[in-house]
Image 1 (cartoon, helix red, strand yellow):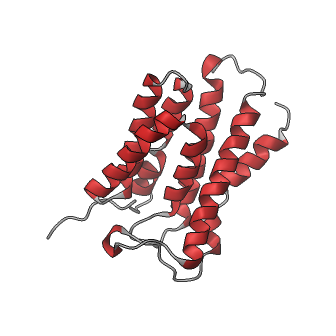
Image 2: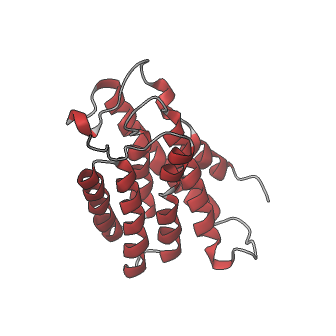
Image 3: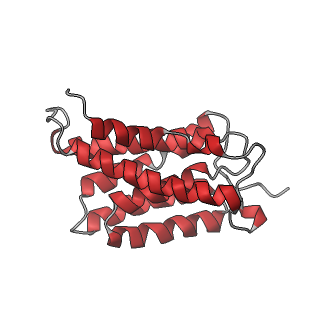
Length: 193
């Protein structure tokens, strides 16, 4: 496989843990605090969404010109972008491990979805994600709901490549699974005592 600088730049943007630039001891805003991020955290959130969008766009551009792999067939582009998104989501989820409610991959996911999803799919998946997260008061539910929205709405919208939306939707479960396997939680709902 020939080296693609576009693919390499996209992968670096997707995997780079931007949260290393936060101030020591800084906390992201969780559901219990009922407030929005501010200061450096807000700037990092906006930068995180932007770099995720650019990274996903670069990977999409690069995989469309890559040589065909027979085993993947028509699914090649979808497999590559979903693998890159899953890797990026996991890297972002594990970048901030000292937080009770892990928000680090949320803005990253918003940036990726803005590039990967058609606006109609986006209009269906985002309310599902926000509604799921707020209803259960857990980011994990938001990721799973966004993935389900991408999966189902991507099948229904004609302008959306259903293979890409399906596999990227499935990849949104990666941070939830990895956070559980790593002994951390992605904002699972607290049990009432």
